[in-house]
Image 1: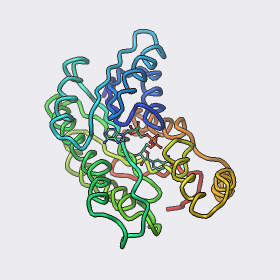
Image 2 (image 1 turned 90 degrees about the vertical axis):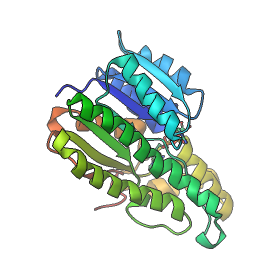
Image 3 (image 1 turned 120 degrees about the vertical axis):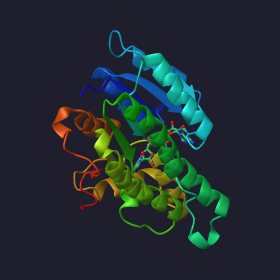
Image 4 (image 1 turned 120 degrees about the horizontal axis):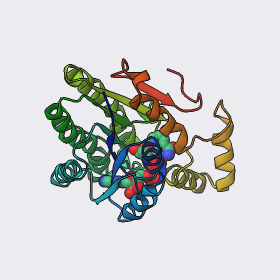
Length: 259
Ligand SMILES: NC(=O)c1ccc[n+]([C@@H]2O[C@H](COP(=O)([O-])OP(=O)(O)OC[C@H]3O[C@@H](n4cnc5c(N)ncnc54)[C@H](O)[C@@H]3O)[C@@H](O)[C@H]2O)c1
């Protein structure tokens, strides 16, 4: 099976940008989706990574069903098909104890992190089934979807849901040759993670640098992860070396959580 055309959500920056860059480098045409208009600049930049690379950008919300369906339709019109999807778009939780969390805030996190992955997977799987080419879906989970932490129920539940969405889709789509896996990152050096550490540092009354250093020291491999660490795992998943891997949650976490 030849995988050549991919969609990456939440690709304007952070892990999504690194994943898209690696896929472009490895020969894919890539459609980048993001709620931030800056995704257009990212797509233009990534088109320069490899001669002849094709990229396109769609600005919208992954929780919006009609936006997602249209973005997938336009991607297929632009590239002629799609064989890989990375559901990376995500937001942090309201970061408050459950008794203080507004239902609307809880719902929004589920809508973006979990329902968004469902909507995109459904739209792309329909195309892949029609193409009869097989394909790959990768959902980005989190260590916080594998083990609870106090104070972020919405985020944890959304990412735990990703694990079971992955398993269900893996079973449903296996007869069509479509593999579905979760990558569960740990503490990655991105704006999302550092924003979270900034607010923890404020709460504890310590310097941001102190907070970062404490997190770093708790990671067995002794450093924060990078977008390239996640992109490398995805490069393996899209390769024929991973042809027998489906329904799995693969930790990319420096050993901070062992499963
Ligand atoms: N950074 C970490 O430590 C870490 C750890 C585990 C899991 N993750 C997960 O990895 C993914 C990427 O995280 P990141 O650290 O690169 O975050 P980030 O905030 O740097 O990037 C997330 C991207 O998603 C986009 N996005 C947000 N809401 C969207 C929506 N509704 N529709 C479309 N796009 C949307 C943002 O605009 C942004 O470009 C997320 O799913 C996150 O939960 C991150």
